[in-house]
Image (cartoon, rainbow, N blue to C red; front, side, top):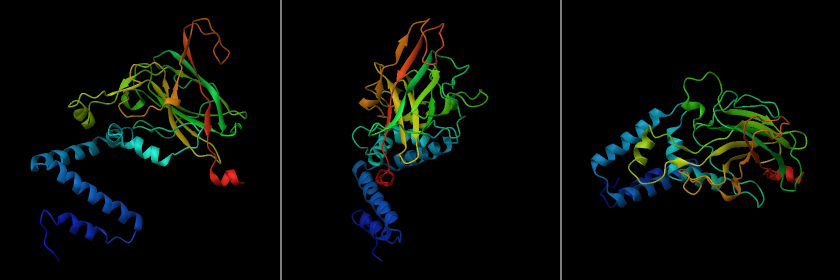
Length: 293
């Protein structure tokens, strides 16, 4: 076996990591070794810097739990999450674009009736989301589910409100037979990504924005169609061009139309306070097998 030198180490490591029966794992690991070695050769870290990096990654892992994923947040601010999403969701023209799930999605949200309020007792201005779920050909998508999560009107997700009892600012709705949906919530506001962890430590050493523009998360699924994870962003938000996680796509920027007190809401009720209405039709792409059937 050849002994290593600085010049030969990468080639020797690559040769060793080729000894993997699984073709995909072999491809991934040899590429990782190649690019990671190139990165290290490029920046030439000191031993102290290497130890700092190991400590950063260790603490990032320790901060992650079932309600907070600091590693996903790290991936988000590096733009990696959006790149992975773009590679895996190359939709046909006309389909609603996807964007990152983010670190705050919690599965098993409560099932809500059409028009039900998923923000009961939450601070913020009432907001109604209306629209349809349809296919590329304009057909209504029957049986679609819409899984929503968002901040409240003070900019906090459930994981950031440890004192609450039960689900907060999230719910699962089902589109009606004609594909329509009606959701009541409160309007989200722009907020800072969590800055109390390792990612915050890193961001504080930069001049980059750590803000996210106001948005609502949607995961839309229906039998026979590709699932969609996306956001709806508020047009005119101060941070719309500086999203800390690179998640904004132009077709996802929508008007949050503010209605005066005394106006009739999409639910039919007269509102005593001002409220917002967000109108958006989600367009899903059929799976190839379903399209051929």
